Image (cartoon, rainbow, N blue to C red):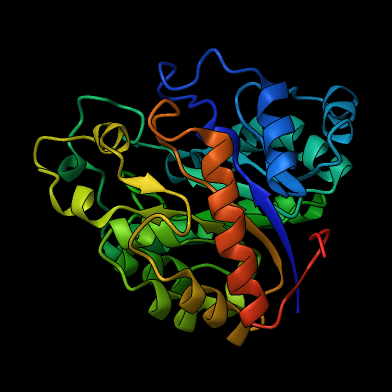
Length: 304
């Protein structure tokens, strides 16, 4: 079993909350990611959009491009998907050229994840029929991405239309194999789902994995009728593996049980003043390398 360890830049610089690390340079993020032991990164707002500009920056620190977020709007797109295909074209070229594992597709039609004053309870909700129609359209978009050389990994996410375990179950039921799953332990736990059961049900669809941890007391203490997703971030809802409530030894073992191989990406948006990114990156790296070793993975590029 083979694994690669990556990290997302959101711990250093949060695109939705510029007050969290807005002054931190891309070079600092890349340097500290590599120093912590990671061999790959995901993209963020400060990353160049062309392969010619990005590849040298990654190479300077011995890093690969693992994946990166794409703000999709297929949910509300016309059936021909022409505008969506045009919108994603540049990112597909970048990802294909640099060998990214997948496009991390987040459904942002009607999202409140980036709205500071929109309470969590007010997120968009879809009926079974709406998810069925959406799934068929998303499958066609994923097939287009695959034709362009980049698989689509669907990212279930808090404060979006596909948030809960039940939402995800319906979407997986109504999408074709072209729609891979980007499994995110932290978002699923935050949404009240069972992080291991999701792997059991949808493991064969998982093509990318975000290793995000959560602080249980913060999540349980939220007033979801008043507080937003960004409020939760500011209160410290998320953290790295080894610093929260999720048993990542169990998560990694369950991913091994279903045969998952690929990137394990640490992602934890939080206040970099309270949680220094370089320090927390090392905590996440140590926790995951230990869990991966127990589960029988060989980690690419791991020291020793």
